[in-house]
Amino acid sequence: MTQRTVIRGGLVITAAEETYADVLVEGGTIAALAASDSDCARAWTADRTIDATGKYVIPGGVDGHTHLELPFGGTSSSDTFETGTRAAAWGGTTTIVDFAVQPRGQAAREGLDAWHAKAEGRCAVDYAFHMILSDVNEGVLKEMDLLVGEGVTSFKLFMAYPGVFYSDDGQILRAMQRASGNGGLIMMHAENGIAIDVLVEQALAAGRTDPRHHGEVRKALLEAEATHRAIQLARVAGSPLYVVHVSAQEAVAELAQARTAGLPVFGETCPQYLFLSTDNLAEPGFEGAKYVCSTPLRPHEHQAALWRGLRTDALQVVSTDHCPFCFAGQKELGRGDFSKIPNGLPGIENRMDLLHQAVVDGHLTRRRWIEIACAAPARMFGLAPRKGTIAPGADADIVVYDPQARQTLSARTHHMNVDYSAYEGKEITGQVETVLSRGDVVIDRRTFTGRAGHGRYIPRTTCQYLP
Ligand code: URP
Ligand code: ZN
Ligand code: ZN
Ligand code: ZN
Image (cartoon, rainbow, N blue to C red; front, side, top):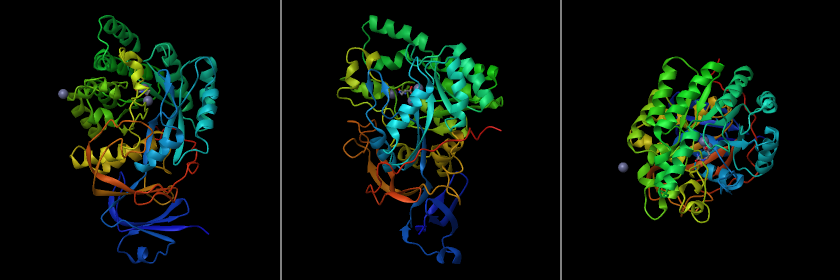
């Protein structure tokens, strides 16, 4: 028999509205919503009742940018699909889109098969894949059509990391042209990697080897320049463009201008750029290595532009770019040479809470919080209407969120497989209480009740922001 669950008495918040409603879940999907005091809702019988009085009832988070078990920087990101998706559940995220990587010199298919093998049977929440193209050639261009057809509908290209993931402008243009024909979405790491490498070499030669120099050489202007170039290339190709991990105010301005001109250009930022700054990169005793990621953290003046961009829709999505490396043994690879510090920050567990704190702090409305963390990434990456909202027919991925609870973020209490927190000691108002993933309770009043292998692979449709 189908399990029936009713979530009673909470404030249901979606990107579109806020209402006091009871939510009826049948099996893995949402069957109905009805006003909490209505005869209709009172008549519902259920196997399980969850009392959400005084709580928010929100869609499970959709994290559109994660790197689990990614070989990178001479090591591998420290969360596996098992530990990373469990931490996601703890943090109220019920769908992730991870980046499968085309190995250089091989087919994209090889990379996708490898990512399926890593993830299958291990995830606590649902997952999907983007594809990183690290070697755009004729064969890969043809593969793009097949991948779109089977639900891998977005492709990340890098203007950074020469010799690793880098594509030149010709390769980028060809991939964009292909995407314009097959409905794929090009995601861009927009930094001028060729110029940055010159500055890296010069900094190291001058003895400027500390982590803070990572931020200094990866200049905001070189992010803005690459963002501008990516927009123009997409325009020439007639393709949409999604710029990942935007951190520079000058890059936000490029996106805003393109959107004002009516171009199908989208932008993502991440909590680290909203809450952390070059002050963290400058922490003494090599502690700054904990904050090395690309694009880099910026002086905090940039944060106001990012918040404004999120409010005015110059930016549509907040993802984590979760790419954790332990301080011990991994970040330490770059002692004496910042360019050898593996790039990436942990955060898959913290995103929903940090963005709720932004609501408390007055940066965002509650509905915008749900928009940028759930609804927009679901539509952007072809996961709607199953994911990102609370509506009849949608997957029952639901978070009961306590807006009054107080917590302090710390590596001592988090569930990510990494030995530090980028937000150590940060006080947050609000906490995930209970999480449902397709109707199964995976976090029950702050106890993990899920299992590795509950999470399913979700093939995606194409970007739903496009006609
Ligand atoms: O520093 C970062 N962002 N590491 C992950 C790889 C990428 O560029 O997204
Ligand atoms: Zn990137
Ligand atoms: Zn400062
Ligand atoms: Zn990334």
